[in-house]
Length: 253
Image (cartoon, rainbow, N blue to C red):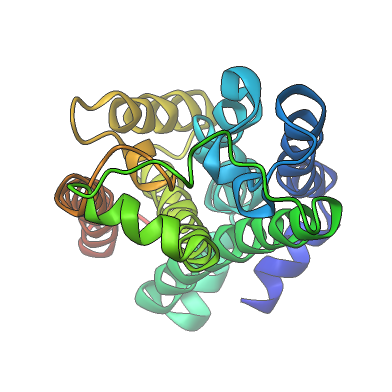
């Protein structure tokens, strides 16, 4: 794990993606402050709420997650294959230990990076919009049939934290998706487009789009959010498991 973190830290492309993920929510916060309402409630200024016009930062951040995670750390397997490092590590540590380490790193590094980026954004929202109460009617709407929305109105900070953790979790799963594709197709010309294609299918899923579990204060209730969470988690989890056992059972290193 330590070697994977150091590898990402020393790689210029990985660090560029790291700072991109950190800065994009901050750009969204600036846009919300200047475009929408200068007196917006801090909880509604959070990037996940999607209050900026056109939601451009959100789209750029979440639609291309597997690409970001691949550059950040998860295409390290492709680098190992090209240099022969995978053979050396497997001969010393074993195939199972090698791939389990890749799985842990590919989930945890993207998870932590996104968690830090969103946490910084949430803290800055409370600093920049301290004391502001504007909500454009969102917190005053009466929608008693939607229990999740009503809960969000009463506990906006809590719901933001829950979605912050959830988005970080799915960022980790996006990292596992990138690793899984690179394990089965260890060539960037296949890994990058296939990872994006599969993720975009999840983004475009009717009634179960992965973006549904990434945005609080929407019109969707617990049943829609819950079913979308399960569907997208299972798809990404199954892809990861299939890739792991495929590589573990094959003779090819």
